[in-house]
Length: 287
Ligand SMILES: Nc1ncnc2c1ncn2[C@@H]1O[C@H](COP(=O)(O)OP(=O)(O)OP(=O)(O)O)[C@@H](O)[C@H]1O
Ligand SMILES: [Mg+2]
Image (cartoon, rainbow, N blue to C red; front, side, top):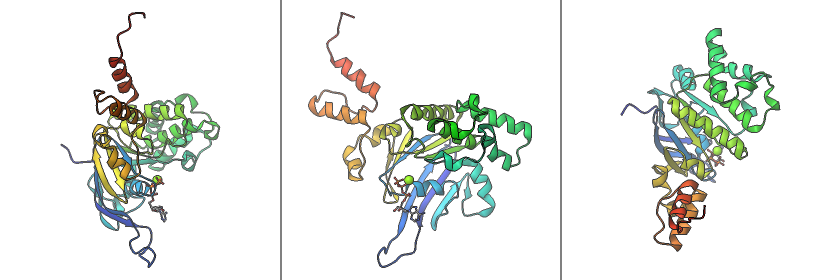
């Protein structure tokens, strides 16, 4: 297996010094994880478990006080590497407005690569590709502030994609969006996966996490568990212990199984539950 794209090793981080009230202010407490090239990794954890603090370590917005974060082998504490790290790992947050700088969609998306000194023809190519990937090419001449929240978030993602990152980190990027907006962003994530861009989604939505290749559960600044969604969501007690729930479809399936022990185990998605219920019903010949 090739080297992981990002490696966090025993990372510790505090926003403040120890005090009598908070003798141990560490927000990240020896956190270790890897992000592999091209994977879709979901990071879940209760409020305050350190997810956003971790996200900011993945592209050198924050640096570990102990331990290391390596992006393509470059230590995020090396000032000479920061520019390459920021191009490699792009970040989108909950409020896309905070990332918008221009009055026209196309200019907004061009801003990042323009600052990198990308030549004009190449810049146009990248902007077009990024807007097509996110389905926003038709809106290229519009002012971003007139777009829907889902569209704004797709423009913010396009702005990052125009930098040609190898990894996109979405920190609660869909939590303000309605179902359509979420579906639009989910579609973009699928497209990125197809193109081999790694995606790290930090999310409170367990159904979103269920769609990832791998899930990491964060608790009190350390990795509590890790595995495929099917594995992580097979242990509802462990999730409940850190204040998390099953994806709704998985909770329904678990309830069915308690009531009907022959109901299949390990179902995660609405489609899987529908199939299992359909298979257990008597065949109907009238339609
Ligand atoms: N800029 C900051 N200055 C001081 N403390 C902070 C700062 N940002 C976060 N914290 C604290 O660090 C801890 C972890 O916060 P963080 O935002 O990383 O958690 P999170 O898992 O992203 O939470 P949420 O689910 O609410 O987004 C919290 O106790 C928070 O209050
Ligand atoms: Mg957060």
